[in-house]
Length: 187
Image (cartoon, rainbow, N blue to C red):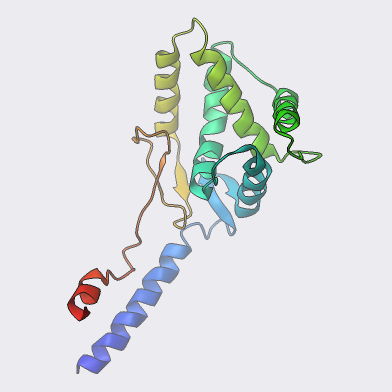
């Protein structure tokens, strides 16, 4: 009898895993869907690869995805307060950093990389100005909380209440079995 329940448990786990992995199935290949707009796995990957040479640490995909989700809202709110940076500004900024750091910059940067760079630029602008940076950030946070975001489970779960700046919380899918007790008992 115990033999039958184990295969059934494994089968149930596989079904649950399949359902979890198809959370973005209405948008195949989506890393996230934000208010109906898809951020593809390819866009995420290309944007991450384009920015990685400019960073001193490895850029986690969930971190880049969180930044890509936040970018549009941040750019819109910052623009409403008089702070903006164009795609050309972002490209010139990245080219300048590449030259200073002696890094080979790509001929063109993916749109996602430019949006994240623009977001970083305007954030630096409003935090370094006489503007009400805390008020602007509160407005951005409020707008982010209002978004309808579905994140591919491989990256985690959208959490606009996070205070860390990374609005994607790492999760362990409930279909994974915790074997830590089994390992300790065996040892």
